[in-house]
Amino acid sequence: NISNEKSMQSYTARCSRYKNKYTNLVCGKTAVGRNYNLPRDTEADKQVIVDLLDTLRANLEHCVGMAANMIGVKKQIIVVSAGMLQFVMVNPVIIRKSKSFETEEGCLSLPGVRKTTRYEEIEVEYLDQDFKRRKDKYSGWTAQIIQHEVDHCNGVLI
Image (cartoon, rainbow, N blue to C red; front, side):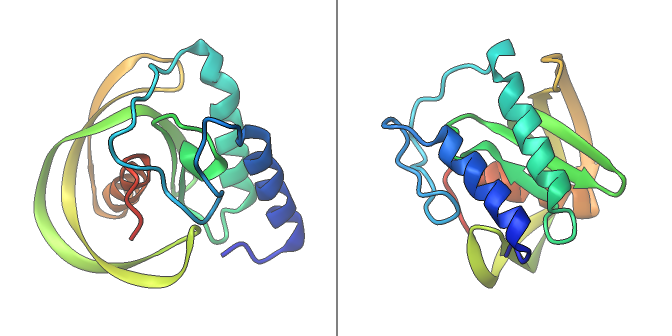
């Protein structure tokens, strides 16, 4: 949960900026349904990427990833913090996964922690923040963060 008041105000402001009549999100509370049609992400989405990265960086002490729907945007865009590096994935699709394990995760959208199944190794196809097609393999903690944020894009909250 966001603990300092300034971060919470920033998070709330970003949520309000993107909430509109087409969005059935209550920021930080409700996920969208799994089967909605998403428009293709384009250059016009660069501001969403900037806002996600800014919000992530402002909350690094208790946040390691965010999805666009967490700020009220119905786009499949995630940002991930892996050590000193923060990176963007547009339209991420996990195409391979292996070595399942049980774990507990927390989430900015819900209080507490919950049990979930994750995979130690994943391969993801996505567009980077310059909208160039990529396919990369991830493992460990970074793979877990990506899986959590992709779940958000698909309307799944743990």
